[in-house]
Image (cartoon, one colour):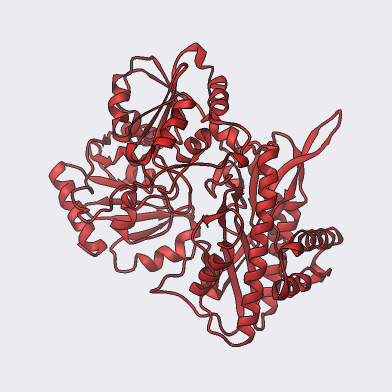
Amino acid sequence: MNLPTDRIKALRSSMKAKGIDAWIVHSADPHLSEYLPAYWQQRVWLSGFTGSVGTVLVTDDFAGLWVDSRYWEQASKQLNGSGIELMRAGEAGVPTLTEYLSLSLKPSAVLGFNPDMVSLKTANIYRDELESKGININTEEDLLQPLWTDRSKLPSQKIFKHDKNYYDLDASQKIKLVRDELKLDDGGWHLVSSLDDIAWILNLRGNDVAYNPVFLAHLAIFKDKVVLFIDLEKVDENIATYLEGHGVQTANYDDLKEFISSMDISKLMVDPDRVALGSVSAYKGGIVEIINPSRLLKSRKTDHELSHIRLTMEEDGAALCEFFAWFEAAFSKGEEISELTINEKLLEYRSKRKGYVSPSFATIAGFNANGAMPHYRATEESFSLINGDGFLLIDSGAQYLGGTTDITRVVPVGVVSEEQVKDYTYVLKAHIQLAMAEFPVGYPSPLLDSIARLPLWKAGLEYGHGTGHGVGYFLNVHEGPQVIAYKAYKMNHTEMYGGMITSNEPGVYRPGKWGVRIENLVANIPAQKTEFVETLKFETLTLCPIETSCVDIGLLDCAEREWLNKYHEQVRERLSRHLSGQALDWLNRKTKAI
């Protein structure tokens, strides 16, 4: 079964044998992770679509993949010949998954899915919207397991301690903060399944998930004990002693469900967005839905952490200057450069920098039309050479012991058109307008989105993705709860507070032509405090020149030009001491005032 058509045919046979009319395959694992170990990439295996997000539905006469606008172009290519229809989520006239199920399934039909790959919140939505229409839900089967005969094994690498020089709160202090937030002295217990939360609480890191320094585990926090459910082979004697010193017991990863079914404490507190239905379905007591306190706590970086992030940005910025200087020189000499070469050279320069650990996501290097796909990824089977004229979009990042980076720059190659200059300049205006924003403490982050989009809207431009996502501290490159995206205005717990790190990445994409995105990371820092209001502003953390040769300076107002010149002055001052020769010359040229 090497083709999606064969796999879907086999799945339909299993569905028929089990009396299941519709089967959903989600992009998830028992920890609701964005990036998945190979063992949990069921949707990729079934459909052939490799994007990080997407949901497949299979019935006896239909197969569809729901993805948002970031993945439409990629999905249309990868689904070709698969028999799977592309459902453009968010497009007018396209039903949501539950709407489609409500319309297509008859009363008494049976819907199935793997409960380990569905959040408690999503499962409740399915029940609320579908069971009222007479549709039954079966979560007792994993139909793909017997079909996926060459499935990878679960990762088994050792975990390690985050260097104590890089944090100021130890594991015992963080556990106490969580307990205090939940008032566990009043009874009840708390289950944490999200991997970045567990890593943050325990000041431990791992290598189980590509690009994210986390490890597969669950964490149960009680008033008087803490239990870490983990593959015990990953815990060496040093880590075992460390955990014991912070009052943390260990148990086998696979023992969680049995442990939960045996609990007689009446109140289990979980984050419904970040715990799987399968993890808690056997619990006999009451479930209280909360947001993980650790999610809020870890989003607000301490002054100590911010100081390390600033140093990390200098290391990353210097590596980027070396890379861009190399690219300029190599291209001018006529050397063959491909999108794959970009990734290789970025890795080469970053890996020499202090504290470097790994990339923080797969590099997106897209030339011209490939840059119009926000989540494009070049492969050995499909990539472009960088030649001719156009835009090269490079979105990359790295994990350092002192922080996580994420940056996007656009490089003009050869001669660029008037329309490209216009697109680039308006994206730059959008980026600068958000960078200059000031807002009250506790302001809902989705509402900041219009600040960035307004210059684009006025020019008749728009983009389909959010403008900003939270970023972890030597953790996941995508972190919440804050998000700068106006479509997320109904989300809870999105308020902005000091110490949060968020991306600033507006863009414009012309399918089949080019893409433009300019991204820096910004930190919430105090702005002013009066008798009327206490406000925050953004400190731009990322240090790397923004290309100005393709800017229509006449479209920038005075404040925007002043911001850009001051930013470049800071970049030059902070990076110069890290560079020499060709890279230093490149930095000085690219940071000249406009």
